[in-house]
Amino acid sequence: MSQPSASSRPAGEAIPHTFDATDFVKVRGTTDGQQVFLVWQGEIYGMLPAERKRHLFSIVGMSVARCLPHAEKGWDFISRELTFYLDPTTQEILHQWHNPWTQEPVTVMHVANNPVQGHFSGQFPAKITGDQTTFQFDLFPQYPNPLAEDPALAPYSPQSIYQAAELFKLVVPTADLLGPEQSTVSHLTLAWDRIGPWLPWMNMGKHPGQMIYSATGQKVNGFTDLPKLLQEQINQRVPVYRNAPATKMQQTDMTSWSYFKQHFQNYLAGDTFPIKQVDEGKD
Image 1 (tube, one colour):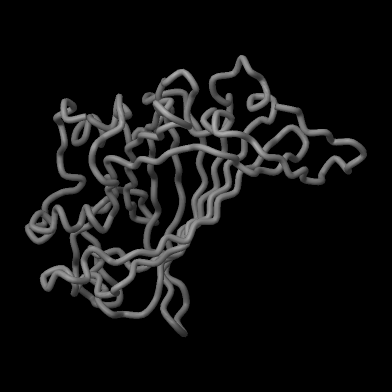
Image 2 (spheres, rainbow, N blue to C red):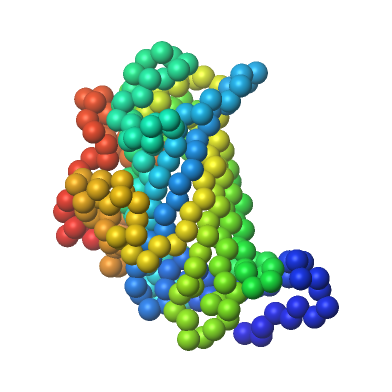
């Protein structure tokens, strides 16, 4: 691959460039099949028409992922991810939350998505500024709401279509992408913003409004570099999240909506989330 030329461009000007899938694997994983941890922290706000925003939660989360070459083309991306909702004042994990709009207590269902998978192939546009490269992904998922057709679940998420916006920016050292001896980037910073519907466990029903997420994160060297809260929760409740799956899993991706459907009875019972998952032999 030819290296981008700065020519006579000003030092702060972004240079458009296209990287191939193997280069991007260095960003989101490694080319040697080892697992990579990302961590993120941020805030969630609630907005209703004509009302001031409410600071609902802080969040802390992680992903453990690996990339494996596909037998025919490109790379398979295989991961698990967790996110915990925290009290924005105390920064403690929330297991019960007082809904300020309905004035009802609800069980908090933390994010436990296992698996989250994808496939990398083709070209990945980016912008090079100085010695840094930024990959920007503006995603707008839209698909039938898996809860809307079930009479027991629809009151918690009645919209027929799930619709959101997910805005990602991944910044990495350009030299790590261009160096053939590099199996992964030495450093990665992440910006993540999201606009989405009320979470089913909030029991907002047909209340208008939306949730705004604002988070940043980075790549860390391993499990012991995760925030203590994440290490403790993984060790105590979901040790399967210490490792990415070793091979591609033959099941559909987990989302907060499908997780709510799967564990609805646990939610009604007021159980503590994430539900314990100790069997690592199901991959």
